[in-house]
Length: 61
Image (tube, rainbow, N blue to C red; front, side, top):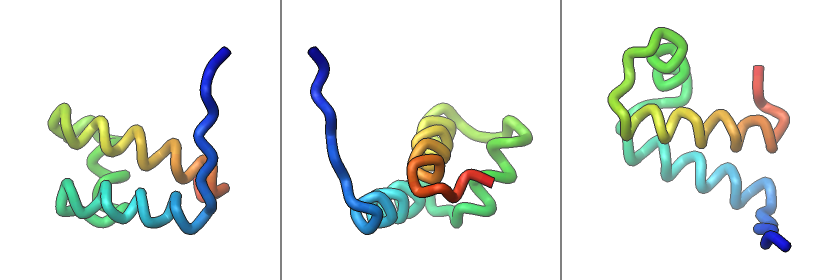
């Protein structure tokens, strides 16, 4: 049986902010570059994680 990690919405937002700080981008820039496949491997990893967090928060436009 797997382990579930439970995070509050605030914790998810803080995690997303830390990820964006790591790649020195705001969310809009990251999303634009991600949609155009213009990210390095480490940035692509952050992009996918931010998209997952946004999905959990209901912010996945």
